[in-house]
Structure formats: structure tokens, C-alpha cells
Amino acid sequence: DQDLPSDVELARRADRQPIEDVVAPLGLEPADLDQYGDHVAKLSSATTRRLTDRAASSDTRYVLVTGMTPTPRGEGKTVTNVGLAQAFDRLGKTAVAAIREPSLGPVFGVKGGAAGGGHSQVLPMKEINLHFTGDLHAVTAAHNLIAATLDNHVHQGNALEIDVDRIVWPRALDVNDRALREAVVGLGGTTNGPPREDAFVLTPASELMAVLCLASDREDLESRIGRIVVATDADGAPVTVDDLGVTGAVVVLLEDAFRPNVVQTTEGTPAFVHGGPFANIAHGTNTIVADRAAGALADYVVTEAGFGADLGAEKFFDIVAPAADITPAAAVLVVTVRALKYHGKDLWPVEFDALEDPDVEAVRGGFANLDRHVGVLQQYGVPVVVAINRFPSDTDAEVDAILEHCRDDLEVRAAESTVHRDGGEGGIALAKAVDAAVEGHEGTFAPLYDRDAPVSEKIETVATEVYGADGVTFTADARKDLERLERVGLETAPVCLSKTPYSFSDDASKNGAPTGWELTVRELRPAAGAGFVVALTGDVLTMPGLPAEPAALEMGLADDGSVSGLF
Ligand SMILES: Nc1ncnc2c1ncn2[C@@H]1O[C@H](COP(=O)(O)OP(=O)(O)O)[C@@H](O)[C@H]1O
Ligand SMILES: O=COP(=O)(O)O
Ligand SMILES: [Mg+2]
Image (cartoon, helix red, strand yellow):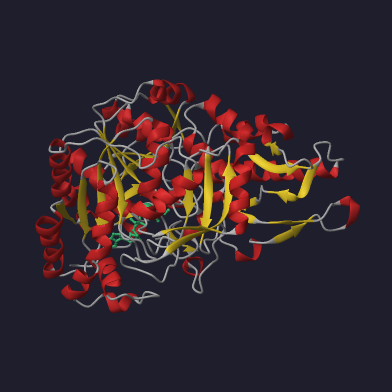
């Protein structure tokens, strides 16, 4: 398999069409777009409202792309998502790839870009991976305006009697910076004070990002922002963004960010790239507005949920689909030979060169992880199709072992996908398997837990039925947090579990399908704006750190304007 040119080189070579031509087959006119140059646009406010007001048309097929428990490099969900949308396009259907927009954190950190790869990318790759249309910068600014307004309120006399030891609204930055995980602000005497402990989260972990992704329209966006709890007062009552009086300014900052970004894939298939929460520290899928707008226009909406099915897919099914009134038609579970070997060899931490050598037995050893993910997805009543995302070093024997296992043992459809190397052509078999699975499926989709169940019961359900835990241990702090939920009206809200993506359990070193363990919940953070409760487990960090060799060290700008080191 001859080596492909780099993603940035392939992106540069792809012949791009004017964005108005890309979306014309969807029935969009130039008047529906606010353009940012020839290849990037946002839906206009009027069109966003028109498309999202429509009931989700029942004949639109929403295909969720999820994955098995990944290695730190990621196993190709975004690549598969883009490639599958291209495949449906090639089969004469209208399709939209609906994915998240990248955060600068991973771009300059370890994972690199999140715009797909090879012949299945969204373009323009450099712009999308860097500033794009400014949405993440807007969220960062809006987040920090709330924080500054809060400290200013306290400085100016604290009429709301905010308890400065119970402020729960951090600051945000879209850069991985462990030095900011815990900070002290307000130093410098009465001019700057009062001093207090503070924290920074990466912008994708900001509750404003979740609000932007879950709001159904502009009015809902505003009321959700106003409901965000930033602190508690001397009586222990919640203090909200509305109480601070800054809701209007935040909406002004986020009005453009709320409208879906419209771009194209390497093959000219439409893509709505919008919203950027990760699935370990947040709910992990793109905006509802992008899903709904795409669903009003296309036969297929192929959308991705981050990390493994235990994270992104669980949150898509239990939080996003109900909030968006979307019924998923199928789930595509992306697996790779290398991730199966990683689980099969029970490696931790991962040594990638050990995964290059052909080893069918090690692939078989990883089936326990694959099988649990298939079982998790089937619990939601959706048909599952396994996509084997083929890497250059994979052998036919390894791929055949997976196909046979899916057919003979799991009795689920599976298809080899070569969309990274071949673009949409490499996803035709997968697209046909998805259609066959949808057409042959009985049963109906349903979230896993009853929407009125108490938060603790919802956490137990996800822990035992999705993660495979024997039960849940709430620390003393978490139990206190549970009691406080009533005061913010979230005692029966959906839960957004914050957990390591590298294991079904809350311990990254336990790969495969761990059994005989308890999930430990150490803290609950009410997200009244997002309308869910974040449950922190293990040692998940909402402000990641840079690795020993950050991707940033490989980047540069050539004289011809091309960027090196972006991948
Ligand atoms: N089949 C493949 N061959 C080579 N590289 C791939 C393949 N699939 C994905 N990649 C690369 O692996 C990295 C992770 O892919 P991505 O689609 O972002 O995974 P995920 O969305 O699951 O995190 C990206 O750099 C991507 O270009
Ligand atoms: O939130 C994580 O998303 P990926 O799995 O696509 O990196
Ligand atoms: Mg991805």
C-alpha cells in the first residue's frame, strides 16, 4: 500500500467546489448562507430557524458513528464518518456529515486535528483545525466574561452575597495547560481582590459548549445560559448567570457561534461541522441544531459521538437524541486491528510499534472489548454494523478474523472500510451494510434509563449496563453533591459521566472488558444550563496537559503559506 501524502497535502490538492454548489443538491440557496470566503459558510439565522423548526422528518436516516475503546491515537471514527457520508453520496443519496469542530487543545497536543484524514477529510483542513469561524474563541470569551463579571460583582460589594468559597464557575482556555488546572486569582490587595482559588477548563469542557450544543433555538439558548449556576450564596441558594445580569452579553457573543458551519468533504459531500465537546469530559457530539438542520435537508445524516460507545454513544442515546427528538436509525461501531490487538495483548500504556506486527491471536484476544460494545449498542434497540477501519499494516488474515467473528459469533453485519485510502469508494460496502441493517431491523430505539429516575439511579444504570460495573461507590463529597441537586432542580436530570476513554472502567489501565469492579463517583457538578449533571469519576481532568512531545513542536509556516506539522 503506497504511502499516502500527508493529510494537509491531500487537503491542499483536493479540488474544492464553491460552497454554494456543494449544498445546492440539499436545496440550499446562496441566500441561506452567510459566507466566510468561497469554501466556508454558516447557515443564516433565518435558515437555521426555518430548518430546525421543522419536525425531524421521519424518513431521514440518522447514522451514529461510534467506536470500540480506543488507543490514544484514535481509531478512525471521524475518518469513517466522513467516508461513509461520501459513500452514501456516491450511491446517489443526499448525505451530510455532521461532526464536531476541533479544539486547539488536541491540535497542538497529542491527537492532532479532528477533521478526518486521507481521502476522507473535511476541508479546508487548516482553517477548520485552527480558527475556523471563531466559534471556540467565542465560547472562550463568553465563558470568561461570566467569570470576570462574577469576580467583579464580588469586588463591587457582593450584593448577591456570593460565598467566594463556593464558586463553581471556572475560567476557560482553548489550550492544554496543566499549570492552570488550579490557580489563585484576585491577588494584589483590595485593588484586585478578593483573592480566591480558581480553576481553568479546556473550552470543550465549558458548560457553555454543552449549552451551545443542546439548545434547540435562540430563545432556548438564552434561557439555558441564564440558568447556568455559577456559585451559591450565603444561604446556600444557587446564583445564576441571570442573577449576574450578563446573560444578554453572553448571547450577543454566541449568536454567530450558534449557527451551523457548512463546509465540504474531500469529495465535495456537504458537512456541517459545529460544536466541540469531548466525550470524556463532556457529552461528545456536535450541536443539535446541526443535526436537525441536516435532517431537514438530507436522506442521511452521518454523525459522530466521541471516544468509545461507553462514552459518546451512551450520551448521544441518553442525552442528545431525546433532547433533539431524533431517532437513530443505526450505529456504526468502528474497530481497528491495532485497537483489538491493544486489548488482546492487555497492554498499558500502549506501545504502538508492538501493534504493527501481524498477530491474529492478539486480534481475537481483543474481541471481548468489541463484544461488550456491540452488546451496549444493542441495548438501545438500534441495529449495529461493525466497520473495520483498515490501516496499511493490517493483514487480510487479521481483517478476516474480525469479519468471521461478527458474522458467526455476534451475528451482526460487518464491513471492511478503506475510506481513509480510497475515499467514499472505500465505504460502499459499509453503506450497503448499514442500509441492509436498517431495512432488516425490528425493535425500536429507546434511551437506557427512565427520564424521571433520580440521578443516582441513572448513574447506577449506566455504570452497570454500559460500563459493566458491579455497582457505584459515591464518595462523601459526591453524596453531599447529590443532596444539593434538589436546590437547582436537577435531582432527576440526565447524567453526563466524565470518565477515562481508555477503559470501560474508571481505571485506564484496565482494558478489554473488565469485570468485578465498582465505579467510583467523586463529585457531581450541576449543569443547569446544559440540563444535566456531570458525574466526575477516576482522575479525569477537564484541563488536559500537553504531552512530552507536543504536536506544536513540529509545526511551521512555509513561504507558500502552507502549514507543516498539522495532521
Ligand atoms: N485507516 C486509516 N489509515 C491511516 N490513518 C488513519 C486511518 N483512520 C484514521 N487514521 C488517522 O488516525 C487518527 C485518528 O483518526 P480519527 O478519525 O480522528 O479518530 P477518532 O475520531 O476515532 O478519534 C487521525 O490522524 C486519522 O487521520
Ligand atoms: O471526544 C472525543 O472524540 P474523538 O473520539 O473523535 O477523538
Ligand atoms: Mg473523532
